[in-house]
Each structure stands twice: as C-alpha cells, then as structure tokens.
Image (cartoon, rainbow, N blue to C red; front, side, top):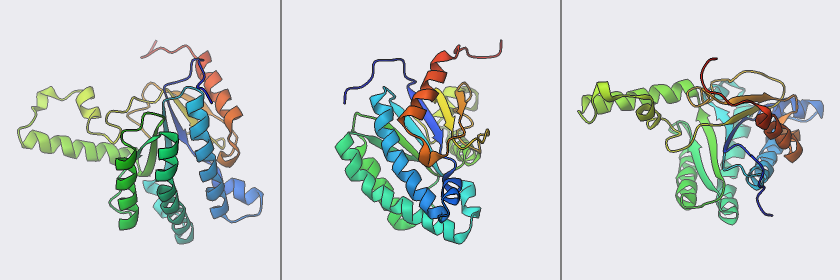
Amino acid sequence: MERSEFNAPNHVAIILDGNGRWAKKRFLPRKAGHAAGSKTVEQICEDAYNMGINYLTVYAFSTENWKRSKDEVDALMKLLRQYLKDCIKRSTKNNMCVKVLGDITPLAEDMKQSIRELEEATKNNTGLHFQVALNYGSRDEIIRGIRKLCQKVRDGAIREEDICEEMFSGYLDTKGIPDPDLLIRTSGEERLSNFLLWQLAYTEFYFTDVLWPDFNKKELQKAVDYYNQRDRRFGAV
C-alpha cells in the first residue's frame, strides 16, 4: 500500500489504556486484554505508516506497573518477551526501525538481550520509527539524564553555563527523535501518567473513550483529523 499524501503528524505518541477493562467486559482474564492490545499495536504500526506518520511511540510498561499483581506482571513480561522476539522478524519485513525507551536494567537478561538484538537489527531500516516505552517513567528518565549531564560537568567535558534545552534533550532516552506532535490516550482517561513529560511540552492531546484493543485505523484517522483542525501555536497567547 502506498503512503497517504494528506497532512499527517510527523510523530504520534500513544498511551495504550483499557486492556484490562476490555477483558473484564468480556469476562476474560486481564492477560487476554493485554494479548489483544499487542495485536492492535501491530496493526496500528502499519496503519500509521501508511497514513504518512514517520514516528510512533507507545507506552507499553511503566515504572509504576511493577506495583500491579504478580500474576499480571508475570503475564505482561511473558507477552513482552514474546513480542520482542517476534518484532525482529516483523520489523525486518516492514523496514521498521525499533528503539526501546526506559531503564531496561531490572528486566530479565534474555529480554535485555532481545532488546539489544532488536535495536541492532533494525537500526538502519528506513520505514516507520517505532519507539516502545518499556519500564519507562518520564521523571525517572529526566533524573537519569541529569545524572549523566552532571557527570559530564564533573569530568570537565562540558561547562555548566553551556547547558541548554537542546543539550539536555540529548541526554534523554529520546535522543535524536523529534518531539511528538500528537498524543493519543485511549479508554477515557485524561492524564499523562508520567509519560514523556519533557517531550510533550507543545504536543496536541487527543483523548478517546475507545479501549485500546478496539482502537483501529478509523479511530487513528479521527485523532489525526482532530490534529489537523488545531491551530498549532507555540507558547502562551
């Protein structure tokens, strides 16, 4: 399928919300909702690129998600483990460049290895740039960035007075990735939940009651249409 010519946002970020509620409505275990949600991610990657979107970032697992029940966390880890393995083959087929955002140090060694292999195998792909936020929290990301920057100052590599927004952005997980133009959150919730706080400073927000497993190309089109109706201005008026 050829890519669309209409005015699509360059970078769309999505908070994938509502998997558990989707499963509950169907009297299914929560893990069934997460499994259905992962299938939606696969389809939306294809739809987004065909619509002309170049960067897609999804919030898959937050630093706060560890507080969920052990059974649910174990199910999520199993699903993510399989997704990472499958993603190499899928990304190669679709020419997709994949990057994982977040602190992966607490993850199991096989997952960390899969992440390294996935990023290395897809780094030169020229299709959709797909970022997966995994064990990600924006406050954690900012603190990690500050620590790296402070170490550079202590080492004499940079001067404190030279620190600026552009320099600091280079110490975040999203280094080299443009800030999102549009944020979508599904399931009716209207909060950021510690997602890309620095990067969303001038992003348009779109909230929908649709649960993530039910989100599709038509719903993505609605969000993009909303974006195109906005009068994009930066700073306060």
